Length: 195
Image: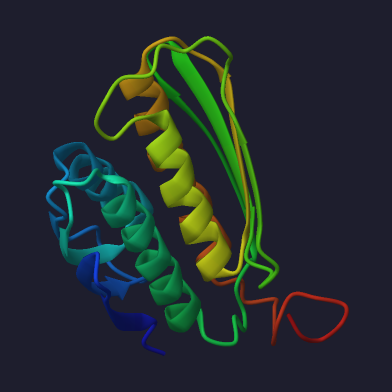
């Protein structure tokens, strides 16, 4: 079974082409015009073993928000399409990931019921560019369109770069686990018989 998707999105604000292979090796080619987002998506691909190609052009002269959010939407659409009926997958995934002084947990349920939780320590100094608020918008868009519960909890940390990096690495690891197959699961892993 090929679990791949190609998604295109074109609006007055952004133009995005994205290719995803859930069962990849981490190969990636990322160009969004936002250097730190490119770095995070590269980490996401590598640590989740997802093959990911992203080409995005956005109205960066306005700000990074439209591009960041729309890339999140498109990545979520790609995950949703590539997962298909979600037959045989573990469905749940959890990762605890350190990044120097930061410790982050990410827990996911690929339930087709979007729900997003995002908790970071208070009083973190927020910089410009791709910062914690933009990471939140990206990840919320991704979770919503991907049809998943996504709970991100930064237990402690100080450095904004490290916090965001730990989120993306932990999310990748949790999603790799949740999207993986378990031979004991015949169809969908639900007492309802459908997700």
